Image (cartoon, rainbow, N blue to C red; front, side, top):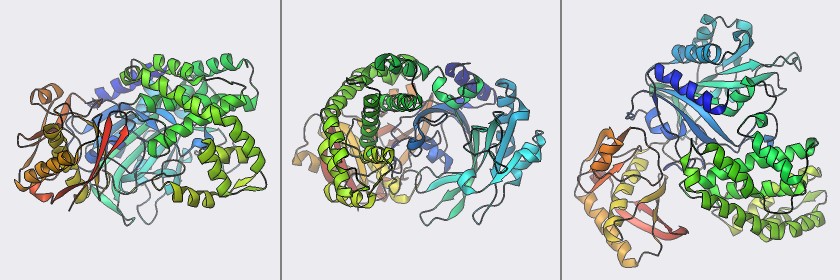
Length: 585
Protein backbone atom coordinates (compact mmCIF):
# COMPACT_ATOMS: atom_id res chain seq x y z
CA UNK A 1 0.00 0.00 0.00
CA UNK A 2 1.28 3.51 -0.80
CA UNK A 3 0.31 6.91 0.67
CA UNK A 4 -2.30 7.57 -2.01
CA UNK A 5 -4.12 4.29 -1.30
CA UNK A 6 -3.96 4.75 2.49
CA UNK A 7 -5.53 8.22 2.20
CA UNK A 8 -8.25 6.89 -0.13
CA UNK A 9 -9.10 3.97 2.19
CA UNK A 10 -9.15 6.22 5.26
CA UNK A 11 -11.50 8.81 3.75
CA UNK A 12 -13.77 6.10 2.32
CA UNK A 13 -13.94 4.39 5.73
CA UNK A 14 -15.01 7.57 7.50
CA UNK A 15 -17.38 8.63 4.73
CA UNK A 16 -19.15 5.31 5.41
CA UNK A 17 -19.36 6.43 9.06
CA UNK A 18 -21.18 9.60 7.88
CA UNK A 19 -18.13 11.94 7.95
CA UNK A 20 -17.81 14.73 5.36
CA UNK A 21 -14.36 14.92 3.72
CA UNK A 22 -12.83 18.42 3.94
CA UNK A 23 -9.83 19.85 2.10
CA UNK A 24 -6.36 20.43 3.57
CA UNK A 25 -5.97 23.97 4.92
CA UNK A 26 -2.95 26.23 4.28
CA UNK A 27 0.31 25.55 6.14
CA UNK A 28 0.15 29.17 7.33
CA UNK A 29 -2.60 29.37 9.98
CA UNK A 30 -5.50 31.60 8.97
CA UNK A 31 -5.88 34.65 11.25
CA UNK A 32 -4.05 32.82 14.06
CA UNK A 33 -0.79 34.19 15.51
CA UNK A 34 -0.49 31.52 18.22
CA UNK A 35 1.77 29.28 16.08
CA UNK A 36 3.78 29.88 12.92
CA UNK A 37 2.58 26.80 11.04
CA UNK A 38 -0.41 24.47 10.93
CA UNK A 39 0.90 21.80 13.31
CA UNK A 40 -2.10 19.44 13.28
CA UNK A 41 -5.38 18.82 11.50
CA UNK A 42 -7.32 20.36 14.40
CA UNK A 43 -5.64 23.75 13.96
CA UNK A 44 -7.92 25.10 11.18
CA UNK A 45 -10.95 23.69 13.04
CA UNK A 46 -10.51 25.54 16.36
CA UNK A 47 -13.62 27.78 15.96
CA UNK A 48 -15.76 24.67 15.36
CA UNK A 49 -14.24 22.80 18.30
CA UNK A 50 -15.26 25.81 20.41
CA UNK A 51 -18.88 25.48 19.27
CA UNK A 52 -19.26 27.42 16.01
CA UNK A 53 -21.34 25.25 13.60
CA UNK A 54 -19.41 23.77 10.66
CA UNK A 55 -21.20 24.02 7.28
CA UNK A 56 -20.60 20.31 6.58
CA UNK A 57 -21.93 19.08 9.91
CA UNK A 58 -20.61 17.49 13.10
CA UNK A 59 -18.53 14.67 11.57
CA UNK A 60 -15.48 15.54 9.44
CA UNK A 61 -12.40 13.77 8.02
CA UNK A 62 -9.39 14.86 5.96
CA UNK A 63 -5.70 14.64 5.21
CA UNK A 64 -3.92 17.80 6.41
CA UNK A 65 -0.40 18.96 5.51
CA UNK A 66 1.48 19.89 8.71
CA UNK A 67 4.82 21.27 9.87
CA UNK A 68 6.27 20.81 13.35
CA UNK A 69 9.73 21.99 14.33
CA UNK A 70 9.71 20.89 17.97
CA UNK A 71 11.48 17.62 17.02
CA UNK A 72 13.87 19.13 14.48
CA UNK A 73 16.93 17.77 16.32
CA UNK A 74 15.50 14.24 15.93
CA UNK A 75 15.06 14.54 12.15
CA UNK A 76 17.02 11.77 10.46
CA UNK A 77 16.13 9.10 13.02
CA UNK A 78 13.71 6.32 11.89
CA UNK A 79 10.47 8.24 12.51
CA UNK A 80 10.81 12.03 12.87
CA UNK A 81 9.93 14.53 10.13
CA UNK A 82 9.20 18.27 10.13
CA UNK A 83 6.72 18.11 7.22
CA UNK A 84 4.16 15.30 7.24
CA UNK A 85 0.61 14.48 6.20
CA UNK A 86 -1.92 13.84 8.96
CA UNK A 87 -5.10 11.84 8.52
CA UNK A 88 -7.83 12.94 10.91
CA UNK A 89 -11.47 12.49 11.81
CA UNK A 90 -13.50 14.77 14.07
CA UNK A 91 -16.65 14.74 16.08
CA UNK A 92 -17.86 18.27 16.83
CA UNK A 93 -20.11 17.60 19.82
CA UNK A 94 -21.40 14.33 18.31
CA UNK A 95 -19.89 10.88 19.12
CA UNK A 96 -17.23 10.52 21.81
CA UNK A 97 -14.69 8.06 23.25
CA UNK A 98 -16.43 4.71 22.67
CA UNK A 99 -17.13 5.24 18.94
CA UNK A 100 -13.77 6.92 18.24
CA UNK A 101 -11.84 4.03 19.84
CA UNK A 102 -13.98 1.34 18.18
CA UNK A 103 -13.48 2.90 14.73
CA UNK A 104 -9.74 3.35 15.25
CA UNK A 105 -9.49 -0.33 16.20
CA UNK A 106 -11.66 -1.39 13.24
CA UNK A 107 -9.65 0.61 10.70
CA UNK A 108 -6.28 -0.62 12.01
CA UNK A 109 -7.22 -4.29 12.25
CA UNK A 110 -9.93 -4.85 9.62
CA UNK A 111 -8.98 -2.35 6.87
CA UNK A 112 -5.18 -2.15 7.28
CA UNK A 113 -4.78 -5.68 8.62
CA UNK A 114 -2.61 -4.99 11.66
CA UNK A 115 -2.53 -7.88 14.15
CA UNK A 116 -4.67 -6.88 17.18
CA UNK A 117 -2.28 -8.93 19.37
CA UNK A 118 0.51 -6.46 18.51
CA UNK A 119 -1.56 -3.43 19.52
CA UNK A 120 -0.75 -1.60 22.79
CA UNK A 121 -2.52 1.57 23.91
CA UNK A 122 -2.04 4.40 26.38
CA UNK A 123 -4.62 6.39 28.35
CA UNK A 124 -4.40 9.52 30.53
CA UNK A 125 -3.35 8.75 34.14
CA UNK A 126 -5.20 11.73 35.61
CA UNK A 127 -4.01 14.76 37.64
CA UNK A 128 -5.37 17.86 39.39
CA UNK A 129 -6.83 19.18 36.09
CA UNK A 130 -8.68 16.07 34.87
CA UNK A 131 -9.50 12.55 36.17
CA UNK A 132 -7.91 9.23 35.17
CA UNK A 133 -9.40 8.14 31.84
CA UNK A 134 -11.14 4.92 32.86
CA UNK A 135 -13.76 5.49 30.13
CA UNK A 136 -11.16 5.14 27.33
CA UNK A 137 -9.54 2.13 29.04
CA UNK A 138 -12.94 0.47 29.37
CA UNK A 139 -13.59 0.98 25.62
CA UNK A 140 -10.26 -0.73 24.82
CA UNK A 141 -11.01 -3.63 27.18
CA UNK A 142 -14.36 -4.18 25.42
CA UNK A 143 -12.32 -4.69 22.19
CA UNK A 144 -10.32 -7.49 23.86
CA UNK A 145 -7.19 -5.39 24.49
CA UNK A 146 -5.89 -6.93 27.76
CA UNK A 147 -5.12 -4.76 30.81
CA UNK A 148 -1.37 -5.49 30.53
CA UNK A 149 -1.33 -3.74 27.14
CA UNK A 150 -3.20 -0.66 28.42
CA UNK A 151 -0.80 1.88 29.96
CA UNK A 152 -1.83 4.93 32.00
CA UNK A 153 0.59 7.79 31.40
CA UNK A 154 0.84 11.41 32.68
CA UNK A 155 0.02 14.68 30.95
CA UNK A 156 3.34 15.02 29.10
CA UNK A 157 2.54 11.74 27.28
CA UNK A 158 -1.24 11.58 27.12
CA UNK A 159 -2.66 15.08 26.82
CA UNK A 160 -2.95 16.98 23.55
CA UNK A 161 -3.24 20.72 23.02
CA UNK A 162 -3.88 23.51 22.99
CA UNK A 163 -2.26 24.32 19.64
CA UNK A 164 -1.25 27.76 20.98
CA UNK A 165 -1.24 29.23 24.50
CA UNK A 166 -4.97 28.78 25.00
CA UNK A 167 -7.90 26.84 23.55
CA UNK A 168 -9.31 23.32 23.10
CA UNK A 169 -7.38 20.39 24.59
CA UNK A 170 -7.91 17.14 26.44
CA UNK A 171 -6.71 13.65 27.36
CA UNK A 172 -5.72 11.31 24.57
CA UNK A 173 -5.40 7.61 23.88
CA UNK A 174 -2.47 6.60 21.67
CA UNK A 175 -2.07 3.38 19.69
CA UNK A 176 1.26 1.60 19.22
CA UNK A 177 2.30 -1.40 17.13
CA UNK A 178 4.81 -3.76 18.75
CA UNK A 179 7.67 -4.16 16.25
CA UNK A 180 8.84 -7.42 17.85
CA UNK A 181 12.10 -5.98 19.18
CA UNK A 182 13.19 -6.99 22.69
CA UNK A 183 12.36 -4.54 25.50
CA UNK A 184 15.33 -2.27 26.18
CA UNK A 185 14.67 -2.52 29.96
CA UNK A 186 11.99 -3.75 32.38
CA UNK A 187 10.55 -0.19 32.28
CA UNK A 188 10.19 -0.19 28.46
CA UNK A 189 6.65 0.81 27.44
CA UNK A 190 4.81 2.58 24.57
CA UNK A 191 6.47 5.96 24.14
CA UNK A 192 9.96 4.57 24.82
CA UNK A 193 12.33 5.62 22.01
CA UNK A 194 14.16 2.28 21.73
CA UNK A 195 12.07 1.32 18.68
CA UNK A 196 10.05 -1.53 20.18
CA UNK A 197 6.77 0.42 20.10
CA UNK A 198 5.81 2.41 17.00
CA UNK A 199 3.13 5.09 17.52
CA UNK A 200 0.52 4.93 14.78
CA UNK A 201 -2.63 6.80 15.86
CA UNK A 202 -3.80 9.25 18.51
CA UNK A 203 -7.41 9.80 19.62
CA UNK A 204 -7.78 13.13 21.43
CA UNK A 205 -10.89 13.75 23.55
CA UNK A 206 -11.24 17.52 23.53
CA UNK A 207 -13.52 18.35 26.40
CA UNK A 208 -11.43 21.12 27.99
CA UNK A 209 -10.27 24.63 27.11
CA UNK A 210 -7.09 26.07 28.61
CA UNK A 211 -7.52 29.70 29.76
CA UNK A 212 -4.96 32.53 29.78
CA UNK A 213 -4.57 31.90 33.51
CA UNK A 214 -3.61 28.26 32.87
CA UNK A 215 -6.89 26.77 34.10
CA UNK A 216 -8.69 23.91 32.34
CA UNK A 217 -12.39 24.59 31.89
CA UNK A 218 -14.99 22.22 30.39
CA UNK A 219 -15.97 23.05 26.79
CA UNK A 220 -19.66 23.46 25.99
CA UNK A 221 -19.37 20.46 23.65
CA UNK A 222 -17.29 17.26 23.81
CA UNK A 223 -15.15 16.81 20.69
CA UNK A 224 -13.04 14.05 19.20
CA UNK A 225 -9.88 14.91 17.23
CA UNK A 226 -7.86 11.99 15.90
CA UNK A 227 -4.56 11.93 14.06
CA UNK A 228 -2.71 9.27 12.08
CA UNK A 229 0.58 10.16 10.39
CA UNK A 230 0.60 8.98 6.76
CA UNK A 231 4.38 8.45 6.54
CA UNK A 232 4.69 6.45 9.78
CA UNK A 233 1.69 4.26 8.94
CA UNK A 234 3.01 3.45 5.45
CA UNK A 235 6.43 2.57 6.93
CA UNK A 236 4.79 0.13 9.36
CA UNK A 237 2.49 -1.40 6.71
CA UNK A 238 5.41 -1.93 4.33
CA UNK A 239 7.60 -3.41 7.07
CA UNK A 240 10.17 -0.63 6.61
CA UNK A 241 12.61 0.25 9.36
CA UNK A 242 12.39 4.01 8.73
CA UNK A 243 9.99 6.52 7.16
CA UNK A 244 12.78 7.48 4.73
CA UNK A 245 12.28 4.17 2.87
CA UNK A 246 8.66 4.86 1.81
CA UNK A 247 7.63 5.90 -1.72
CA UNK A 248 7.33 9.65 -1.00
CA UNK A 249 10.82 10.00 0.54
CA UNK A 250 13.04 7.32 -1.01
CA UNK A 251 13.24 8.93 -4.51
CA UNK A 252 14.67 12.11 -2.92
CA UNK A 253 17.35 10.11 -1.05
CA UNK A 254 18.22 8.24 -4.28
CA UNK A 255 18.65 11.56 -6.13
CA UNK A 256 20.93 12.88 -3.36
CA UNK A 257 23.06 9.72 -3.71
CA UNK A 258 23.30 10.38 -7.46
CA UNK A 259 24.22 14.07 -7.04
CA UNK A 260 26.76 13.38 -4.27
CA UNK A 261 28.08 10.23 -6.01
CA UNK A 262 27.81 8.30 -2.75
CA UNK A 263 26.08 4.98 -3.42
CA UNK A 264 26.78 3.32 -0.07
CA UNK A 265 26.63 6.09 2.54
CA UNK A 266 28.05 5.52 6.01
CA UNK A 267 25.94 6.38 9.07
CA UNK A 268 26.95 10.05 9.16
CA UNK A 269 26.39 10.53 5.40
CA UNK A 270 23.00 8.80 5.60
CA UNK A 271 21.94 11.15 8.42
CA UNK A 272 22.89 14.15 6.20
CA UNK A 273 20.89 12.69 3.31
CA UNK A 274 17.81 12.25 5.50
CA UNK A 275 18.06 15.78 6.92
CA UNK A 276 18.32 17.20 3.37
CA UNK A 277 15.32 15.08 2.28
CA UNK A 278 13.11 16.23 5.15
CA UNK A 279 14.12 19.91 5.04
CA UNK A 280 13.84 20.16 1.25
CA UNK A 281 10.34 18.64 1.29
CA UNK A 282 9.25 21.00 4.10
CA UNK A 283 10.76 24.00 2.25
CA UNK A 284 9.01 23.04 -1.01
CA UNK A 285 5.64 22.91 0.75
CA UNK A 286 6.17 26.24 2.57
CA UNK A 287 7.25 27.97 -0.65
CA UNK A 288 4.44 26.24 -2.55
CA UNK A 289 1.73 27.53 -0.21
CA UNK A 290 -0.45 30.25 -1.73
CA UNK A 291 0.47 32.56 1.19
CA UNK A 292 3.83 33.10 -0.60
CA UNK A 293 6.28 32.90 2.32
CA UNK A 294 9.89 33.61 1.28
CA UNK A 295 13.11 33.07 3.31
CA UNK A 296 13.69 35.90 5.79
CA UNK A 297 14.87 36.60 9.33
CA UNK A 298 11.41 36.67 10.94
CA UNK A 299 8.45 34.39 11.56
CA UNK A 300 7.76 31.59 9.01
CA UNK A 301 10.49 32.99 6.75
CA UNK A 302 13.08 32.36 9.48
CA UNK A 303 12.12 28.70 9.84
CA UNK A 304 12.15 28.35 6.04
CA UNK A 305 15.62 29.92 5.83
CA UNK A 306 16.79 27.59 8.60
CA UNK A 307 15.51 24.52 6.67
CA UNK A 308 17.13 25.59 3.38
CA UNK A 309 20.48 26.59 4.87
CA UNK A 310 20.72 23.48 7.02
CA UNK A 311 20.03 21.37 3.91
CA UNK A 312 22.77 23.23 1.97
CA UNK A 313 25.23 22.74 4.85
CA UNK A 314 24.52 19.00 4.92
CA UNK A 315 24.96 18.95 1.13
CA UNK A 316 28.36 20.51 1.78
CA UNK A 317 29.15 17.67 4.23
CA UNK A 318 28.40 15.22 1.38
CA UNK A 319 30.74 17.12 -0.93
CA UNK A 320 28.01 18.79 -3.02
CA UNK A 321 29.50 22.14 -4.02
CA UNK A 322 26.73 23.42 -6.31
CA UNK A 323 23.04 24.35 -6.12
CA UNK A 324 21.04 21.11 -5.98
CA UNK A 325 17.87 21.72 -3.95
CA UNK A 326 15.83 22.87 -6.96
CA UNK A 327 16.48 19.47 -8.63
CA UNK A 328 15.09 17.72 -5.55
CA UNK A 329 12.10 20.08 -5.41
CA UNK A 330 11.04 18.93 -8.90
CA UNK A 331 10.74 15.35 -7.54
CA UNK A 332 8.47 16.62 -4.72
CA UNK A 333 6.33 18.63 -7.17
CA UNK A 334 5.83 15.62 -9.41
CA UNK A 335 5.02 13.33 -6.49
CA UNK A 336 2.33 15.52 -4.90
CA UNK A 337 0.84 17.31 -7.92
CA UNK A 338 -2.47 15.44 -7.75
CA UNK A 339 -3.03 16.00 -4.02
CA UNK A 340 -1.80 19.60 -3.75
CA UNK A 341 -2.25 21.54 -6.98
CA UNK A 342 -0.89 24.73 -5.34
CA UNK A 343 2.65 23.28 -5.63
CA UNK A 344 2.55 23.26 -9.43
CA UNK A 345 0.79 26.64 -9.48
CA UNK A 346 3.70 28.11 -7.49
CA UNK A 347 6.46 26.08 -9.18
CA UNK A 348 8.43 29.07 -10.49
CA UNK A 349 8.39 30.77 -7.07
CA UNK A 350 9.61 27.56 -5.36
CA UNK A 351 12.50 27.01 -7.78
CA UNK A 352 13.62 30.66 -7.94
CA UNK A 353 13.55 31.15 -4.14
CA UNK A 354 15.54 27.95 -3.52
CA UNK A 355 18.16 29.07 -6.05
CA UNK A 356 18.29 32.62 -4.65
CA UNK A 357 18.74 31.39 -1.08
CA UNK A 358 21.41 28.93 -2.18
CA UNK A 359 23.30 31.70 -3.96
CA UNK A 360 23.14 33.98 -0.91
CA UNK A 361 24.24 31.32 1.56
CA UNK A 362 26.89 29.63 -0.56
CA UNK A 363 28.73 32.96 -1.01
CA UNK A 364 29.31 33.21 2.73
CA UNK A 365 29.23 29.56 3.83
CA UNK A 366 32.94 28.87 3.36
CA UNK A 367 33.97 32.12 5.05
CA UNK A 368 31.48 31.45 7.85
CA UNK A 369 32.82 27.92 8.43
CA UNK A 370 36.35 29.34 8.48
CA UNK A 371 35.24 32.00 11.02
CA UNK A 372 33.52 29.30 13.10
CA UNK A 373 36.76 27.31 13.31
CA UNK A 374 38.50 30.45 14.66
CA UNK A 375 35.96 30.99 17.46
CA UNK A 376 35.30 27.31 18.31
CA UNK A 377 36.87 27.18 21.77
CA UNK A 378 35.44 25.62 25.00
CA UNK A 379 32.41 27.95 24.76
CA UNK A 380 31.24 30.13 21.86
CA UNK A 381 30.09 33.53 23.13
CA UNK A 382 26.66 34.86 22.18
CA UNK A 383 28.37 37.82 20.51
CA UNK A 384 30.42 35.52 18.26
CA UNK A 385 27.31 33.46 17.42
CA UNK A 386 25.50 36.69 16.53
CA UNK A 387 28.42 37.75 14.31
CA UNK A 388 28.06 34.44 12.41
CA UNK A 389 24.34 35.14 12.04
CA UNK A 390 24.67 38.76 10.96
CA UNK A 391 27.78 38.57 8.78
CA UNK A 392 27.56 35.05 7.37
CA UNK A 393 23.82 34.28 7.51
CA UNK A 394 24.24 31.35 9.89
CA UNK A 395 20.93 30.65 11.67
CA UNK A 396 21.72 30.30 15.39
CA UNK A 397 20.66 26.64 15.28
CA UNK A 398 23.34 25.94 12.65
CA UNK A 399 26.04 27.39 14.92
CA UNK A 400 24.64 25.27 17.76
CA UNK A 401 24.69 22.15 15.57
CA UNK A 402 28.30 22.77 14.46
CA UNK A 403 29.27 23.36 18.09
CA UNK A 404 27.54 20.15 19.25
CA UNK A 405 29.57 18.20 16.67
CA UNK A 406 32.69 19.51 18.42
CA UNK A 407 31.13 18.94 21.88
CA UNK A 408 31.31 22.64 22.80
CA UNK A 409 28.60 24.96 24.11
CA UNK A 410 27.15 28.22 22.81
CA UNK A 411 26.05 31.05 25.13
CA UNK A 412 22.41 31.10 24.05
CA UNK A 413 21.27 33.77 26.52
CA UNK A 414 23.91 36.24 25.32
CA UNK A 415 22.96 35.51 21.69
CA UNK A 416 19.30 36.18 22.52
CA UNK A 417 20.24 39.50 24.10
CA UNK A 418 22.30 40.53 21.06
CA UNK A 419 19.57 39.40 18.69
CA UNK A 420 16.87 41.31 20.57
CA UNK A 421 18.88 44.52 20.49
CA UNK A 422 19.20 44.39 16.70
CA UNK A 423 15.97 42.75 15.61
CA UNK A 424 13.08 43.10 17.97
CA UNK A 425 10.67 41.41 15.60
CA UNK A 426 12.63 38.18 15.23
CA UNK A 427 12.05 35.11 17.32
CA UNK A 428 15.02 32.78 17.75
CA UNK A 429 14.53 29.08 17.36
CA UNK A 430 11.50 27.16 16.32
CA UNK A 431 7.82 27.92 16.75
CA UNK A 432 7.72 30.47 19.55
CA UNK A 433 4.15 31.22 20.53
CA UNK A 434 2.44 34.61 20.51
CA UNK A 435 -0.54 35.68 22.55
CA UNK A 436 -4.08 35.16 21.38
CA UNK A 437 -5.24 33.61 18.17
CA UNK A 438 -8.54 32.04 17.21
CA UNK A 439 -8.14 29.46 19.97
CA UNK A 440 -8.44 32.31 22.46
CA UNK A 441 -11.79 33.32 20.89
CA UNK A 442 -12.06 36.43 23.04
CA UNK A 443 -14.47 39.29 22.45
CA UNK A 444 -11.55 41.44 21.20
CA UNK A 445 -10.51 38.77 18.66
CA UNK A 446 -14.07 38.51 17.31
CA UNK A 447 -14.30 42.31 16.99
CA UNK A 448 -10.99 42.63 15.12
CA UNK A 449 -11.88 39.66 12.91
CA UNK A 450 -15.14 41.36 11.89
CA UNK A 451 -13.24 44.61 11.29
CA UNK A 452 -11.05 42.85 8.68
CA UNK A 453 -14.22 42.27 6.60
CA UNK A 454 -15.01 46.00 6.66
CA UNK A 455 -11.38 46.87 5.92
CA UNK A 456 -11.23 44.49 2.94
CA UNK A 457 -14.29 46.08 1.33
CA UNK A 458 -13.17 49.65 2.11
CA UNK A 459 -9.85 48.95 0.35
CA UNK A 460 -11.74 47.66 -2.70
CA UNK A 461 -13.79 50.88 -2.78
CA UNK A 462 -10.92 53.32 -2.19
CA UNK A 463 -7.92 51.66 -3.88
CA UNK A 464 -9.06 49.02 -6.41
CA UNK A 465 -11.91 46.57 -6.89
CA UNK A 466 -9.23 43.94 -7.69
CA UNK A 467 -7.91 43.89 -4.13
CA UNK A 468 -8.19 40.57 -2.33
CA UNK A 469 -6.99 39.21 0.99
CA UNK A 470 -3.58 37.50 0.99
CA UNK A 471 -3.58 36.59 4.66
CA UNK A 472 -4.39 37.95 8.10
CA UNK A 473 -3.16 37.62 11.65
CA UNK A 474 -5.13 38.69 14.71
CA UNK A 475 -4.25 39.13 18.38
CA UNK A 476 -6.55 40.66 21.03
CA UNK A 477 -4.58 43.93 20.59
CA UNK A 478 -4.54 44.44 16.81
CA UNK A 479 -5.36 43.11 13.36
CA UNK A 480 -2.88 42.54 10.55
CA UNK A 481 -4.23 42.33 7.00
CA UNK A 482 -2.23 41.47 3.85
CA UNK A 483 -3.55 42.38 0.38
CA UNK A 484 -2.34 42.66 -3.22
CA UNK A 485 -1.05 46.11 -4.24
CA UNK A 486 2.19 47.02 -6.01
CA UNK A 487 2.58 50.51 -4.52
CA UNK A 488 2.39 52.40 -1.25
CA UNK A 489 -1.03 53.71 -0.21
CA UNK A 490 -1.32 57.51 -0.01
CA UNK A 491 -2.20 59.24 3.30
CA UNK A 492 -5.48 60.35 1.67
CA UNK A 493 -6.37 56.73 0.81
CA UNK A 494 -5.60 55.56 4.36
CA UNK A 495 -7.80 58.34 5.80
CA UNK A 496 -10.64 57.50 3.41
CA UNK A 497 -10.48 53.76 4.27
CA UNK A 498 -10.69 54.60 8.00
CA UNK A 499 -13.69 56.87 7.38
CA UNK A 500 -15.61 54.18 5.46
CA UNK A 501 -14.94 51.50 8.12
CA UNK A 502 -16.00 53.82 10.96
CA UNK A 503 -19.12 54.89 9.06
CA UNK A 504 -20.19 51.24 8.74
CA UNK A 505 -19.48 50.68 12.45
CA UNK A 506 -21.67 53.67 13.35
CA UNK A 507 -24.49 52.41 11.10
CA UNK A 508 -24.94 49.47 13.56
CA UNK A 509 -25.35 46.82 10.85
CA UNK A 510 -26.27 43.25 11.89
CA UNK A 511 -23.66 40.58 10.94
CA UNK A 512 -25.51 37.68 9.31
CA UNK A 513 -24.21 34.09 8.89
CA UNK A 514 -25.55 31.68 6.23
CA UNK A 515 -24.49 28.23 5.00
CA UNK A 516 -24.35 27.55 1.26
CA UNK A 517 -22.31 25.92 -1.50
CA UNK A 518 -19.18 27.65 -2.82
CA UNK A 519 -21.01 28.20 -6.13
CA UNK A 520 -23.94 29.90 -4.38
CA UNK A 521 -21.48 32.02 -2.36
CA UNK A 522 -19.75 33.17 -5.54
CA UNK A 523 -23.11 34.00 -7.16
CA UNK A 524 -23.91 36.06 -4.07
CA UNK A 525 -20.66 37.98 -4.72
CA UNK A 526 -18.83 36.61 -1.67
CA UNK A 527 -15.14 37.42 -1.33
CA UNK A 528 -12.78 34.48 -0.67
CA UNK A 529 -9.15 34.41 0.35
CA UNK A 530 -6.78 33.84 -2.59
CA UNK A 531 -5.67 30.20 -2.83
CA UNK A 532 -7.86 28.99 0.05
CA UNK A 533 -9.42 25.57 -0.42
CA UNK A 534 -13.05 25.35 0.60
CA UNK A 535 -15.38 22.41 1.21
CA UNK A 536 -18.57 22.08 -0.88
CA UNK A 537 -20.52 23.91 1.86
CA UNK A 538 -19.21 27.09 3.50
CA UNK A 539 -20.16 29.77 6.03
CA UNK A 540 -20.87 33.16 4.43
CA UNK A 541 -20.94 36.32 6.56
CA UNK A 542 -22.81 39.38 5.29
CA UNK A 543 -22.64 42.90 6.67
CA UNK A 544 -25.73 44.23 4.87
CA UNK A 545 -24.84 44.36 1.15
CA UNK A 546 -21.58 46.19 1.97
CA UNK A 547 -19.44 43.09 2.70
CA UNK A 548 -20.06 39.43 1.84
CA UNK A 549 -17.25 36.94 2.62
CA UNK A 550 -16.64 33.21 2.92
CA UNK A 551 -15.16 32.85 6.39
CA UNK A 552 -14.72 30.46 9.34
CA UNK A 553 -13.60 32.87 12.05
CA UNK A 554 -15.39 34.37 15.08
CA UNK A 555 -17.61 37.45 14.50
CA UNK A 556 -19.66 39.95 16.49
CA UNK A 557 -23.44 40.14 16.02
CA UNK A 558 -23.54 43.86 15.11
CA UNK A 559 -20.93 46.34 13.81
CA UNK A 560 -21.86 48.75 16.63
CA UNK A 561 -19.87 46.49 18.99
CA UNK A 562 -16.55 47.38 17.31
CA UNK A 563 -15.67 50.86 18.64
CA UNK A 564 -13.37 53.14 16.60
CA UNK A 565 -11.14 51.78 13.83
CA UNK A 566 -7.62 53.21 13.35
CA UNK A 567 -4.86 52.22 10.88
CA UNK A 568 -1.50 52.29 12.67
CA UNK A 569 0.79 51.21 9.82
CA UNK A 570 0.79 50.42 6.07
CA UNK A 571 3.89 48.69 4.68
CA UNK A 572 5.30 46.31 2.07
CA UNK A 573 5.82 42.65 3.02
CA UNK A 574 6.61 41.07 -0.36
CA UNK A 575 6.62 41.95 -4.05
CA UNK A 576 3.09 43.13 -4.84
CA UNK A 577 1.82 42.53 -1.29
CA UNK A 578 1.09 45.29 1.28
CA UNK A 579 0.21 44.98 4.95
CA UNK A 580 -2.07 47.06 7.19
CA UNK A 581 -1.89 46.97 10.98
CA UNK A 582 -4.93 48.44 12.69
CA UNK A 583 -6.59 48.67 16.12
CA UNK A 584 -10.04 49.23 17.61
CA UNK A 585 -10.53 51.57 20.55
